[in-house]
Image (cartoon, rainbow over all chains, first blue to last red; front, side, top):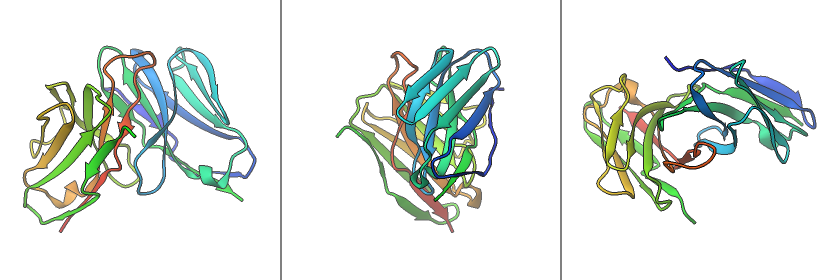
Length: 111
Length: 115
């Protein structure tokens, strides 16, 4: 059973702070890892993906992957109120097209 | 702009009355997916197509069917909707290959209400 686990939150941070979101997954056959942002009532939108161990930075966002620990995280620097949303971690396994999502972490950025 | 379009945005159906949700894409992606998402839950994969090759998830109820008549279109048919089928239905596409695992591109979703 392939599973993706996230802390549901809510995670509350003040404006300008760093928000840290975490995700664990169950299967070492996992290939690619994605972070999506979902505003209430909207569909998910891709923030970034990572598939190699280490860090990947894109603007205010940094994804971190540790395959040995089966752990992926997302850091949001200089958090803004507009970052308030649910952040979904998703994992795609090698050899197929299936992408499994975690239930998401709700983030609130207080102005 | 290339995109994934779902129609309608909101659908109300009666208990037991068949309903069809549609999805079209201009991205020319090989793979199309249908996800069901209930409030505060993870999107749950129902099935996906790789070209015309249909892949059903083991726990997808028989009540849910799908059709993909061509590359651009995919339909979700719910034969006898129950109250528990009320949810947001998300269509997504991806390329079959590519470095980095090919992320999903989502449509705006269809919010299904069952009365």
